[in-house]
Length: 257
Image 1: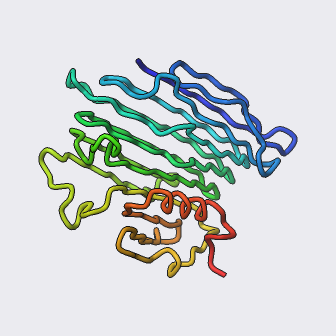
Image 2 (image 1 turned 90 degrees about the vertical axis):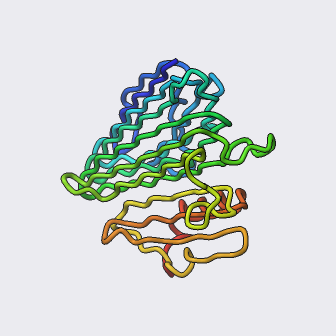
Image 3 (image 1 turned 90 degrees about the horizontal axis):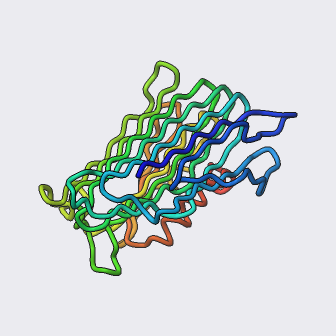
């Protein structure tokens, strides 16, 4: 089953609106909501099937016109079921941001079940002056069933282009059957890997605040030249990861003081 969402946002009377929307089940988009800021529209992304079965594909196309501010919020984690027929489940995200547009994609969470195969490719094309916030968390599996990196493959790829310049080309590739995922230098004893990409030249993060480690939680930060930051987590404390992601999403809590 292939799901599709195509969203186009524009300005009307200096207010961001959802100009065009198309979706094909099992994917669905909520109506636009103005939660905290009348200039920022929030849309929830929903999936009615309960997850991706072998061979399923979800495709998202998101377009933001000049000066729009949009937050997209997946309603639930993406669950990836076993690939018994040998076909991987796929997700493709294609994003276009015009000048002064700002898109925040809240927590893209992926739970690959045992014997599943998942491939995800996200491409972002930005104009100068636009900004992009992307959050993602990869689970080790269904931990309550004792699954920890028992999936077959999980490949994710993120590309971010600022006109002709490639700002981000980042891939995560896990194949537990051929690599020791629990090895030092990969996941070690951690269960979750999470990333927050902030492509915004106007933001200055507190580097010391976002570089720390404890027994079950490690955070590191990388500055992307003058384009923004990557904050990456290795952790066994999922609530803490989500809490710190929310802090990064709140500019007042994340920036230097």
